Amino acid sequence: MRVFGVDIGGSGIKGAPVDLERGDLAEERYKVLTPHPATPDAVADCVRQVVQHFGWSGPVGATFPGVVTGGITRTAANVDKRWIGTDAGALLTGRLGGEAGGCAVTLLNDADAAGLAEMRYGAGRGRSGTVIVLTFGTGIGSAVFTDGRLVPNTELGHLELHGHDAEKRASTKAKEDEELSWQRWAHRVQKYLAHVEMLFSPRLFVIGGGVSRKAEKFLPLIEGVKAEIVPAQLQNNAGIVGAAMAAYAARAGEPPAADGSRAALAPVRSPARPAGPAARTARSAVDSPVGWPDAAR
Image (tube, rainbow, N blue to C red; front, side, top):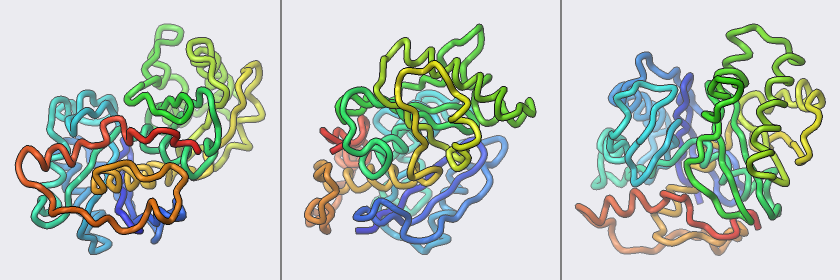
C-alpha cells in the first residue's frame, strides 16, 4: 500500500510515496528549499511541486512545524506568522487539485508524524511506558507517547531553559549558527534532556532529525540522563512516513492495526469521499493522530 507523505520544514520541503507495509520510502525523496518568507501560499506552491514531481494523484499526508488542530495551523515558530489561524488542510488540498481530484491532504504536527513512524516502524517499536521522540533541526520538535498513545502538539522545544526557548540554544540550527563543537552542543542537549526528563520521567528518548545520522558524534558525550537515549531508525525520513500513515488513517476512516500487519494495510474499500463539511471531517481525522491505540506494538 503506497501513500504520499510530505514533510514541511523550516529549511526544506521533502516528500515521496511511502510503502506502508515496510515503513519506508517507495522512491527516492524529492526536496525543495523552503521559500523565504515561508508564507502559506508560497509553501503550498512548493508542496505542489514536490507532489507533481512524482505525478502523484491520491491522498497526501503533510507535516507542519507547529500546532495543528482540525487542519488549522495554530502556531508558526519557524515559518511566516500568516500561517497562524490558516485552514492549511483546505489550502493544500485546493492547491493539489481538490477533493474531486482525489488529493485530500491530511495535516499534522511534524514531530508527531516522526514520532508515529518511529513508534510503529523504528526505535520506539514495542516500547511501553513514556517515550519521547525529539527532532533536532531548525527547531526542536517533540512527540510524547504513553504506552503507545500519542499526546499531540506538545511543542517541548519551546520549554524555557536558562531564560531561552530551548530550541534557540540546543537545536541543530543553533549548533550551526554558533559554530559549536560537537562536545559543546552535546552539553546543551544534555541540559535540555535533563530538563525534559525532570518533567516527564520517560523511559526512552528517541533523537531524530537530520542530525540523527551523526548520532555517534554526540550521543556518547551526553551524561547524567537516566532514560535510555537512542537515535531514530528512520532518521530524517520519519516525518514523511508518519505523514503517509496519517493520510492512510484519514482515508480509511478508522485506525489500521498498530502491528502493521498486511491485513491492516490492504486497499480500503470505502464510499466515495464526502463533500462539504463531511470532507473536512475526513481531512481532520488525525488530530491526535492517529488516535491509534497501542501504536508501539
